Amino acid sequence: MKLPNRSLPWPITWAGVVEIARSESCRLTAYRDIVGVWTIGWGRTRNVHEGMTQTQTEADRDLLTELTNLANQVRAACVIEPTPNQLAAMVSLAYNIGMGWTGPVKPKGAKDGFRQSSVLRAHNRVDFESAGRAFALWNKAGGQVVRGLVARRQREAALYMTPDELYSQYLRPASSLRGELAGEPRDEDYREAPATPEADPETRLHASPIAQSGAVSIATGGLAAASAVSDDVRSVAWSMSIDPLLVVAAVAIVVGAVVLYQRYKQRAEGWA
Image (tube, rainbow, N blue to C red; front, side):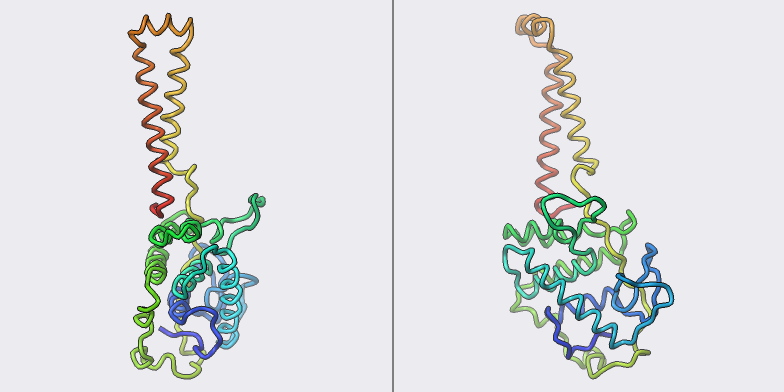
């Protein structure tokens, strides 16, 4: 695995830079990723066109600029100041999914990103375990689970959850990297491998089949209850013998409410 120039003033821990380099790899000629987006360098997708080329120095500088901007934006979005490992993991995530939109109302056509993520919400309420689990919610591209994204999210979550006193485990000696960190590598030293694609936004809860089934259960129960209540409340519920339809409706409403509550609780805790 080849890496960017370590001597540059990286705004995040070297472990984070290594993770991004590992996930993105580097290609100096523009190519289309697996979902058709033009990409170059260390996974850059903005202002990339067919036939575009870079030198390795340009690619490394692009990465430095992007990570500096992202580190500042991630810090600004965090109510709770992240540790170095947490910041590095969240910047790696943001590098892949984007920062998302700002403001109280989603602009038309805007795409969700880090600011809208369950990772950030959990981090800001100091629920770091849930934040670590929530990285896994960003594992799809083009609507399909991508193995590369699954693996990347696992590594980012591991980095996020690593206490900074254990940071050294991510920093193998240069000798163990077969000299990869020594000096400026040549352009031809960088392997031609595709980057992991940009991840789709995490699924909104209202689109979850489980949450939808809970809502349907509640709605069905409500309709059943409404159909049972008329004609002076069905002669006072058959003189207190109670209409069985009301019992069915009540059960449906309770079951639906429980399903919805559990689904929202799971999402808050970072589960899929």
